[in-house]
Image (spheres, rainbow, N blue to C red):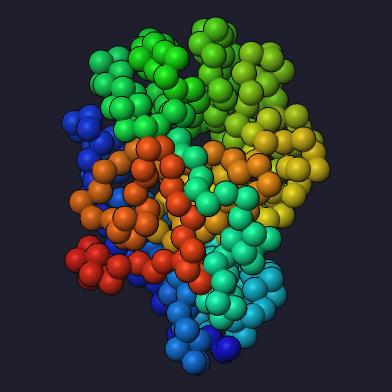
Length: 366
């Protein structure tokens, strides 16, 4: 059960949004390709586990960091010691950051170790987590930022026509948000993620302007994301339920958010926040403290599949997020394609499905 090989694999797959120009640049020029930065662990008996680190923009630098800092600490370890390995890698690398790139690598390793555990046991991950409460998860369409009233209204109606009944916006202009809500009408509930654009004072103005639209939640309105007191000030108005957490690095960030009175909905990302092991802790913390647990998932590799299992394992499965993109090729074929607003939980051992090697070969960056 010793890990004899650890490597990262970066693929970047073209997509389209139905809205014309590429939506985001993530710090660079707008792009129409999406990263899946995977970690592949192989044991001495030939078993292979797959994990995923959060990545954008063909991030070769992040891949190199994981290759040179994280993975050397994994080779030679007993793959059954998931919690021990996670702790040791985090502890040895904590001087390089508790949130961000190192934690993305730790997250990928943890996911891959759970994949190995399920494969060795001959059981799907959801069964290792206590069993499935549902064979399918309900998906919300997480739209890109379209920026105009006409474009966002078209995207909302297109998503509804495809069977989605929950839609998340990433708009920041009030008229555009209003147009999206009007387009959704009674056919879908709408959430709003603004990705931390405003000061507290600015966010309070927007919070008031959005009152009455019936938003299911208001996500990350304040910069920087760790300004929990600022989030608490928005939440204190009582106009909207506040969601946050995709930029968190561990359980302790969610403890701090809760103690600050900053959130109603906790959104850890399995590829950012320490993997399956950490999300299990966060889920139970939420359960004990009256927070809604709703994992963030802007992923299309093993992290996406792991989040499906984590979602289905909850007694009351939360909504599952999928970015509303159409890919030139799907890494998991039909297994990751939404049908009538739902995704099936893979039933095979471990994550239940492995990446398509033909897709990897075609779109591999490094």
